[in-house]
Image (cartoon, rainbow, N blue to C red):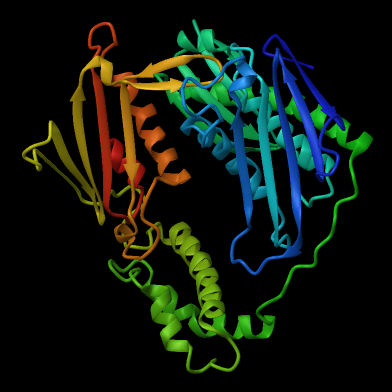
Length: 432
């Protein structure tokens, strides 16, 4: 089929016959191979163990790594991690809760033509692979990047077209609804964004029709898993009924949300010591809290912490905190607090990015870190995880349009946002 003036082709069975399913997608001369594999045994994890890896191989663009000592492709670039996160966020909500096995998606870029980004083809191939596999999944979905050039919407614009586009919008969704939206823009109106989303959804429906046709021809019968009942329904109802009124009474009272679940666990655990453990009690309380919070928000128009729907947390900002840095500022919103430090450097200090398509230099770099103490917990402390990389990229994307053009200001700017306390959106606070 044709998307954005280029052919999109899906192939099944060419490679990786031992995976649950594998799809090779070709868009222009960019090719992405996607495999989906499900583990053989159940896990006992409290979350769905899905992993998505996006591998950009230098050979795909006819390149050899520039290092004189290390020629093997290294860890995924930040860009590859961000593309994997787009796929993850798009497919994760569509797995049934009954699936408790590991599911691994690996998208490998085999050919990069320097014109067409591999992210949307990779997403489409992932959706197709999951759809034709025997892995339980409630897809398909598809995704489209939308640009706006001279007021005209363009599906999956090329790298060159994106340079002159006011909008860089990624939309993923099913035939009925939108699942995920990610965007960067240079002063576009809400109406323009809404129309771009509608434009994207029409393209998405066309791609989904092709995936459904492929599924009809070669799709495997989905495996079935009975949902594991870890908490007897009579006990779930008993605990829910016992706490509902007291829990609802605490909602909307400032400060009452702190330690709410832990407090109810402490109150109940002695009564259910032989029937439910703390983890199971926490699950029940969490579910009741969600139901009652939604009810309070809709019926009383009050949030869990007592604020009205349009009422902001108290805002606070302070500059020039650190004496020896080039710039520093603290932004505080309620109990969320972020310290950002800016450093100015010479043009030569820009970050060199060696990608499949080209070698570029980045002159605005925004790093985000959130240590475990920010949420009052102990945990891993070290190199950034995928979430931290994603939040840094979000801040970069928000601030880039506000920076002067490189020809006017060729210097390198590096901002590091240190999350000091987290109780709400820390990525938004990092931007501020």
